Image (cartoon, rainbow over all chains, first blue to last red; front, side, top):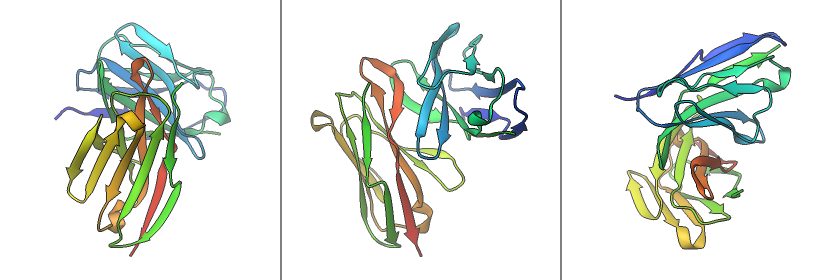
Length: 112
Length: 110
């Protein structure tokens, strides 16, 4: 069965370190998204991609970057982790122009 | 951008009760999804419902796109229904970018 997987599921890192969260989907979807979920804010869009070599900023993109070198993967990089980036991160994918989205299991990131 | 409002924000019910969750959106959309986030944090797809009514077991959903709302019905609630229910819609003119409401937290008491 097609799926979308995130790794790691949990991570603790120190302030100032670079961190990369992985997202891999086997749906062959064109669109991929990264969200963060925080109490009181719901899910907020960080970055998204409509296809290989395409990346776009979401509403909370500062301090994050993504790259899309193939259809299956959209890694999320925190250039210099900050305590404000402690959150649960979700990756999602959807078929081009048909926005039923499917989510990964989430990554809980703690920046100390 | 499009605004998505869900109500009520919190709901506590006894097992066996029925409930209706509402999602209002500020602009025309051509699709809408309902998700359940269980107590372990997983986001589970419930319905992909641009318009009309769909049913899946004890759950059903209705979207009236012309009036900009959707309803999620849960009948004969079970404790496993507890969690947060989100609706999500695509942003206007950008069908692939999905905007979430803040969710309804449902707590079913045994």
